[in-house]
Amino acid sequence: MDLDLDKLKERQKRIRNFSIVAHIDHGKSTIADRILERTKTVSKREMKAQILDDMDLERERGITIKLNAVELEYEAKDGKTYIFHLIDTPGHVDFSYEVSRSLAACEGALLVVDAAQGVEAQTLANAYLAIDNDLEIVPVINKIDLPSAEPDKVKEEIEEMIGIEADSSILMSAKTGIGVDELLERIVSDVPAPEGDLDKPLKALIFDSVYDSYRGVVLDVRVREGVVKVGDTIELMSNKKTFEVTEVGVMSPKAVKRDYLMAGDVGYITAAIKTVKDTQVGDTVTLANNPTDEPLTGYRKSTPMVYAGLYPVDNAKYEDLHEALDKLQLNDAALEYEPETSQALGFGFRVGFLGLLHMDVVQERLERDFNLELITTSPSVDYHVTTTDGTEVIVDNPAELPDASEIKEIREPFVRAEIMVPEDFVGPVMELCQHKRGEFVTMDYLDKYRVNVVYKLPLLEIIFDFFDDLKSSTKGYASLDYDVEDYEPSELVKMDILLNGEPIDALSFIVHKDFAQKRGRDIVAKLKEVIPRQMFEIPIQAAVGNKIVARSNVKAYRKDVTAKLYGGDRTRRDKLLNKQKEGKKRMKEIGKVSVPQEAFMAVLNLNRGNEDSK
Ligand SMILES: Nc1nc2c(ncn2[C@@H]2O[C@H](COP(=O)(O)OP(=O)(O)OP(=O)(O)O)[C@@H](O)[C@H]2O)c(=O)[nH]1
Image (cartoon, rainbow, N blue to C red):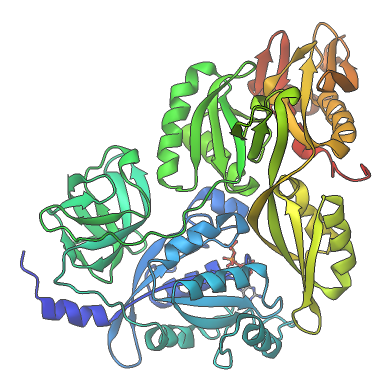
């Protein structure tokens, strides 16, 4: 097929690639919906609420996890039809790496700020990512329909805190539709058209990929230079593997086939790629017979910060879990895993996550989409350990921590946490941070009312319930952003948990020496609650080294639990039986003891484990 380059150049001028970035809940998805609706990309009837958040899980949780690229056509006031590629981005702090991925595919970003909430931590973090990517930023002040909206104040905040001109911000209500027309026109006028030579060799960035059981791996790409067509042989530059292109197209929002994708386009390529490991997000695609000389620079790769063991309840499902992780990783570049074995749980994987939310989402996907029943062990961070003979080891599984007598020093990851909060709540925030072993760094007034409090905190303390505690101690007003800064020595110890006199490797965890006693007592109490009675008494002990810090017993099973309940109440009885059945599914037989999934997560649910422990 011969392409008319002049026509393509003309088309390129009418392309606008942009993302929407915002703090969580400021209205990104609702704005995306309005844009789709106004450009008639989907009919009202087809339109489900929040169409871009197409995964059930996202809809249930109400957060955007995966990014999606959609092509829309917009007929502008100048009479021309523009091609928009809207790339949705997640807003949660766990997913900022996906934001930087999608920004690498754009020329512009709509920076959405809630007119009542103002600039928050993730607004700043995302705005800086956009600035770093040299994107044109179009500020949008959303929710101006709210009685508490203060658009003028928000404009000032944007100028003062982000340092971009905000006088011309679009005032919008995604709810009522005010401002949508202006927004569309401003995308045309403010977001630059993509550049990139059409007659150069193909250079396309893989910014996402999805596994499809019929078509194989589907690559989401942003073409930077050249053109790619069906029948071309593409080469993945990182591993030099070649594939014949079977289909190219765009999402609109369903897949629509095209004859070609050209410089400036955001779309997908399929090439009967069967092995998920062959494709790497961030890699450059070129043509095998006419390759480009230099790959594109990828983007900041995300590194996992939280690690946990994932084990199939049924040991025979190990290979299924392996396959499921392979497939999931394709949609989730941040996911890392390697096989591990546990004496208690058998064969499984040690999996690295970006944060607890990410861990939750992965676990749910594995269970729901791949029909697996899993036991997840309590999350851990990675420790840098120096042993007495001078060896350095990285330990992300508490069970693998060397014996205390062999450890010279343990260093744990510390984060710089920036917490934005109205001044009235500075007291409670500081108190919370102190509780979590925080070290005060600095505090600045952002404007008359708001303060940015900076603390250095151990990541270990942040990943547990810090965010929830922060929200509850500030009535939801605080926002948090953090980055791992360095590893520093801490007085950490390993807590072993013994059931029936046997140490259970999958239940051990690492804790600061000062919190050990209290955590030990709390965990024993919690385990006593969640481990069901059996025919014999089960002693539970928490130990640091040889020292038992807490103990308790699960009493032997006496009679049918349902016997106590009102004989006549069928529903109540059925409920209980069902619940027992549910619980049983998730039991893991360890020695003679049945241990439920809850037990492995007990350390997460110690009701503010650190409180009063100092
Ligand atoms: N009053 C009012 N509510 C709005 C407006 N825009 C969005 N909302 C509401 O604000 C909430 C958050 O909106 P979303 O669009 O889900 O926010 P988001 O930024 O996409 O959130 P994440 O996907 O979780 O990052 C929802 O309950 C919306 O209905 C608006 O203009 N006015």
